[in-house]
Amino acid sequence: MVKLKIENVYTDNRGISRYRLHVQNKNISLLTSYFSNYPLVGYKALQYLRWIKIVNVLNNQVKINKRDIEIENLIKELFNLK
Image (cartoon, rainbow, N blue to C red; front, side, top):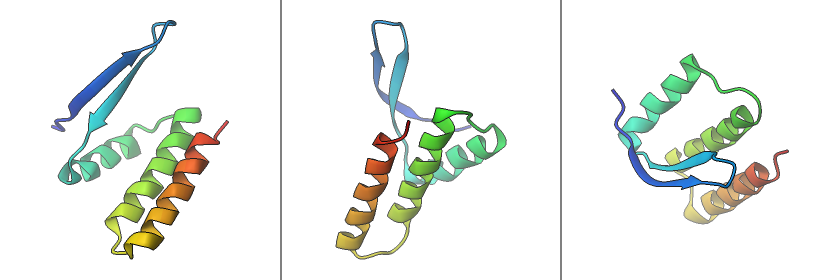
């Protein structure tokens, strides 16, 4: 069982809730395994794929400056998804 710490819940005026989670490193593999078995669809799937790239960059042993630039570029891609 994956235990996630929900840090914040935001609900907009349409009633749509957004959750901010805190995931420990040991739980990331469980979370990615879950989404491999139960994949997201549409826009959320695209967001998930970008998130996985960011997780992989953070897990790799890369120089900090190069890693930070790569993460920044991936986050920009994430925000530019349509």
